[in-house]
Image (cartoon, rainbow over all chains, first blue to last red; front, side, top):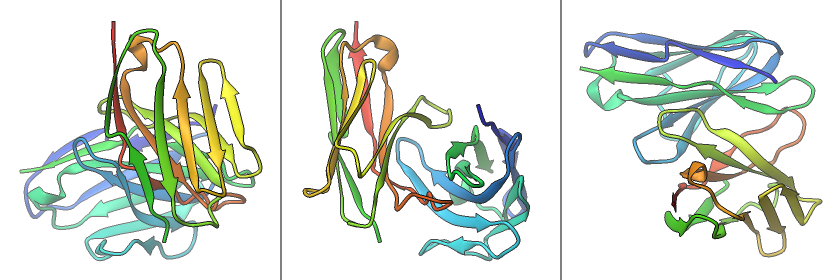
Amino acid sequence: GAVVSQHPSWVICKSGTSVKIECRSLDFQATTMFWYRQFPKQSLMLMATSNEGSKATYEQGVEKDKFLINHASLTLSTLTVTSAHPEDSSFYICSASRRNTGELFFGEGSRLTVL
Amino acid sequence: GENVEQHPSTLSVQEGDSAVIKCTYSDSASNYFPWYKQELGKRPQLIIDIRSNVGEKKDQRIAVTLNKTAKHFSLHITETQPEDSAVYFCAASPGGGSNYKLTFGKGTLLTVNP
């Protein structure tokens, strides 16, 4: 089946630093990728929709300057958490929509801890 | 935008019993309704989905029903096993083509007691 790989799977950083998370579709082209945030024991909250070659569409309440999304190719989208603070600590998950069929596949998730 | 309500938030059953989780949605344009199972710290796994042109779909011990008029859909798990214990999320989406923007319910923690 289709595979979506996310890296890193976990990261610990100091407050004020920036962290980049990559989401790759390994064996298919993804027209659209989605980024979610999940707090402990809570649901997945959509942060933004990332379309290849265009600017991401952010959900209401998500700071686009804080969470930079780049979708430079049909197989890679990146989420950069800029000037991270402890409240940004969370589980970040991406999903990729397969080109032509629209089937959705999730990455493994990245756990960010900001000290 | 879409709003998905999911109930119950927790569900505890004995092994072998059935479990039912219910969701309602608000946007009549939604036509794709997947269910995901998520184990702690792992990615959501699609377990079954249904589209609005179908009223019921079954896959072994798992079934999903959809009432488009009432805007609700349900997950049914029969003959539950301890390995079914996880958090289950329903979702709704306009679906089709490349648009799979999902709105998730808040999740149901299912515990199957041996």
